[in-house]
Image (cartoon, rainbow, N blue to C red; front, side):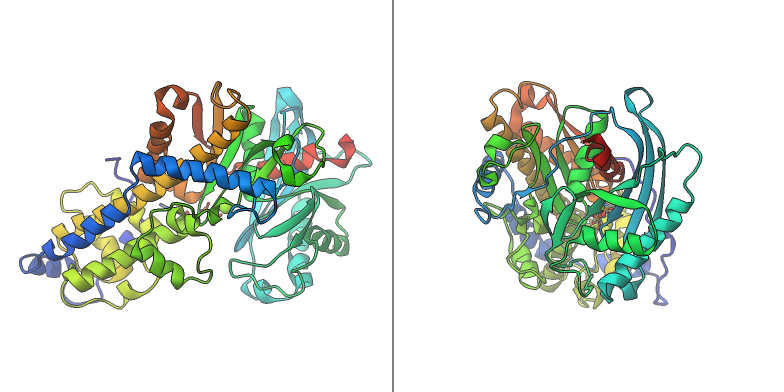
Length: 493
Ligand code: ADP
Ligand code: MG
């Protein structure tokens, strides 16, 4: 077990709404309740979620095959294998002032960095986070981009100190945009559709870089977008700046995605488009992977009730948005068929997404004898009273779901490495190779992270896995986007 973390904020604000303290009622019930009736549910769950080595090997093989099929032709596989148009990665020699703008959810971040080349590296960095007003998320395109450009203009006004723009140059920015885009060049891309609660009219079908450039023009801001990238690509670029051996980047946060460095000869669907460097970054969109996943009845029910049934099945099995919800569904079953929490099933427990992945992660950090934190988190999030046996069973459920998720994510990473190795014998497995990881799930769920790393080690074996470094690249995507603005600067060509 890992060390006990700080109790989550929910614990500190914990209050029982009923006169009888939940702990007392838990004690009262513990004598009458039995967890035995819920045990078959757990046993079946563990059976259905099992990820023995042969299954993991199959996942890795399928991932590699699906990647190849997606590179052959558009629509050739679950994996879109999108061309990022990023042909050159940061080398460390970049110099000058560059900006980055990250629009990925309810917040956007602006950042500036002054780069000093090989010796001075990152001289200084400043950033600000701005939350997007709710009404703008369903307003017009011009309103949204005017808001972003005006926040950016305010940030630029504060430029000074170590940040210097050479005379005669325009400012350049990288634009990290985590919505589905059909990229047409490094600095243009058509928005396919808004997701994640955005429904801004007038943007779908338009070049989002043009939308931003026009809004910056209206603000009188002298800045151009030099690189439009997604967050995995920016993470890879940010990590590569410090380490030449970074070849893959994986995001495990609310959702999941991965990108990697590919040779242009290995991309039939490129049809002869050349890259100066012979390499390019492929955005796999691996969340859509599905081939061979060990799915349970709970996964199928969650998927059927989701806004995108049948889609993003790998994402629904391994990423932060879903792990807590899968656990909740299992607990409902245990409550119904095994009376795990007594006769009454609280409404809260039956509410989709009532239990978050941070909740299940916090429960797994509880090392106390009576699992007090588990009891409080359960009560707070789902309204159930629990005795010690029930809590132990809940922790087992959390562990089963985290274990499957982490191990499947590890197998996916090995699938990418395998695909790279097949095309370039010895180049990948013969030397040090770094996988840059980011995202709240990977960062904050120690058991998940350990399961992931163990699966990679099991699949590769001791010799090969000694070359593979899985490394957390915290917030690399912000600076990564600024670095890609630098490598794609109009002044460098
Ligand atoms: P995003 O993916 O939205 O860009 P992050 O990378 O910050 O954002 O990831 C946030 C996600 O990480 C949350 O939705 C949640 O699923 C997961 N997460 C956050 N904190 C924890 C935690 N303590 N334990 C497990 N998962 C967590
Ligand atoms: Mg993110």
